[in-house]
Length: 147
Image (cartoon, rainbow, N blue to C red; front, top):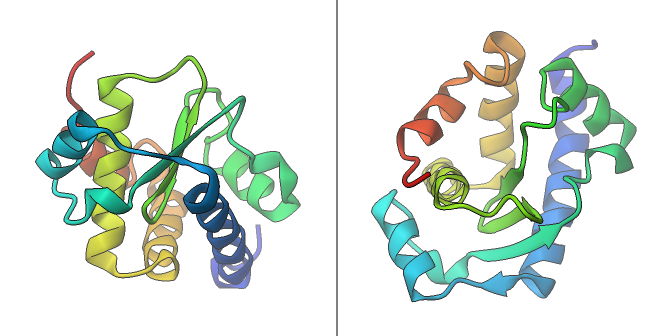
């Protein structure tokens, strides 16, 4: 795998494209969803949009697919992914645990300030520690609620 910095701009473009599409086509949170988002630190839950999909669209971009594969994100365990205030959830996998996990990622985006800033930190972590041991993933797991 090449230097991570050579991939970052492509991954950020991919993430921004999906962010924008989910913002246009995704569903708003109901009051219960907004309360859950607030409970894990989200400052602006009203901006969150969720889109249910058959699968996370890693395969549509060869660079993203290669990175996801190299860090263990294609194992079938990734059932949600967050881009700023936009979230994909795999159909049939909706749960309080998954929503609270993804909402915590929204909080992380808010703290880091942009999709680019988040991806810079996140990709460095997953490349260094692996997907499951990345500090941002471990943080999100600590805020999971329900079963």
